[in-house]
Length: 295
Image (cartoon, rainbow, N blue to C red):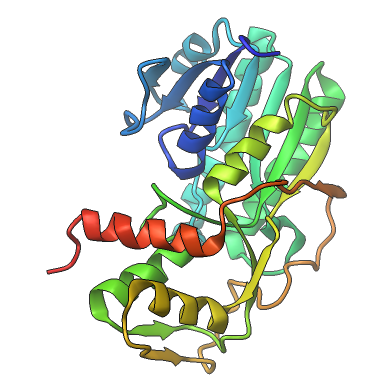
């Protein structure tokens, strides 16, 4: 399959840029389409800046490609709560725009970046938008000659992460403020996966029989929040100073498991070899120091 032309919509962002790099590493011909130029675009990648809601922009970008990866949209739960209409516009109507252009362009393969929150009663408008998008994609598959794969990502972390990324926020607060106020009891459980490991698995679905399936990508490193916080302080070489605010009533995130609502069943795909979370935290610490966020 290597050598095929792939477009990564939303490829300027965290997960999208790493997946674009992995595709290039495996000799796919990669085009990145986003509303802003990627800071990470490589010499062997093509960059197109455009508007996902401009039909001509999307059709022009899709021309000649055989596979579409979709990473665009609102990805922060807090942002989705602040602006539900924009979340619906980007995460539902944006997907629809691309699916319509795919059909017109006769592209058959669609890889959609979903979330573990589709299983949950938490996640607010972000979760609802992802559930709705999956249902819409299934309907397009039933009515048109396309195939899809849902990639339901768990707790991602690593270089290039957004400011609101959970693990990055914790590391930055520890490094900069030498303390951490954590909104939770410390008992919250997450399955962390490094973004580069997730990118490799995201490309692997093209090489195996994953058509019209949902794939869970959460990794194998399971930690509760208290253990994670202790690890961050130790790796950052900062004296432990954490406060857990268990009385905060935040229903937007799940505590131990997202599994509540059950959409399309998913297979779980995990890396045989993976970046250890301690090494991953060290990378983020070094990245924060290198950007001189410390005054």
